[in-house]
Image 1 (cartoon, rainbow, N blue to C red):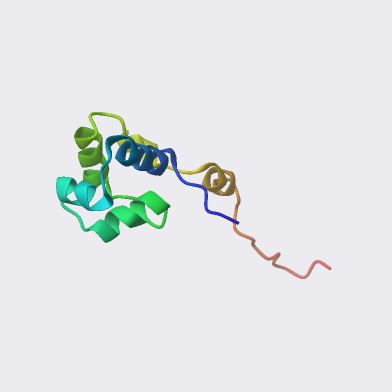
Image 2 (image 1 turned 90 degrees about the vertical axis):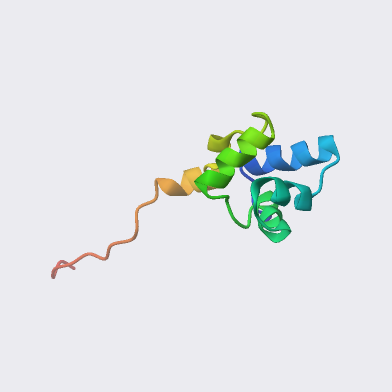
Length: 91
């Protein structure tokens, strides 16, 4: 099953494509490697807060810093509680 991208990752990829920019261009603009931007654009990693904010400034608000949050699938899982085995002698 393919990983669902956050709104931030989708916006980031769309911004680069629309403007004819590369991952390396984005990395240079915000001070990270091309590999880091590749990880952001594919959902492998989420940029840390200072980089999310830098991307928002660099893209003139097209990639919103807060849009890198949870994907729909992560949100569904956030309400799940860990299994806790029953204790005691009840059978």
